Length: 102
Length: 226
Image (cartoon, rainbow over the protein chains, first blue to last red):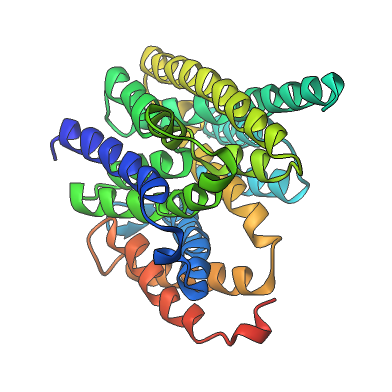
């Protein structure tokens, strides 16, 4: 994959999506079902990303102890409504320490 | 309008900017770990400027996905910004060139801060100050995270592989707390992704989860959404 093509296409696409909302008449996308769908899409994508990032290694399921333990610790922090920085530090620290110990 | 109110809005907006900055470090590090250069990483933050999409794109790249799957996942996540823009357009009353600047700043946080105000003048103030605060912090911390990750070498040694799924969960959490439909969709999407990981090329499990859930949410009757 050409990373430059990806970076530029992502940048252009994201900007055009934002700009479109200012340029099109509001009623075009004002259908409630469309609105609800666009609101719910991130829920599905983010949930899938959590699973893939926690468990996948390419096309394989990989049960990596330190990675999963770090993620689990981060998940507890999210559940306890810890600030984002705390989530990041806790997940990284648990995974790094377990690797160091292992 | 009270001067005190205006100052409060500016202070809150800049506070949000600083808080969001932490995500930038994680994004910068994850992006370099995925194989993008520091320059490419910084350009994504400067030009795409929408955190969830940026995370998704580098997440798919890290997993070995193609340009097509990475871009599609990212743009699907970015589509909500179109709705935000439609919500903000009458509120901000931007015309001419300012419309193009406002478009760039149309993201989760700026929309939330703007629509939370009752007075349109305060909404505009909140939008522009939140945009400015996040833009500066997000790009500075992206660069710091990217340069840091490059200097430190093997990212798994520092537990970055555990940070990325935890970061996605942190982005997902407020949506899970929003309602039962959101939680059902999240569980369904997670199961679909899990099943497809060994069966499809990288990136496809993420896109497929979205498509399948799209059908599910359409069937929910309007009266029983929450």
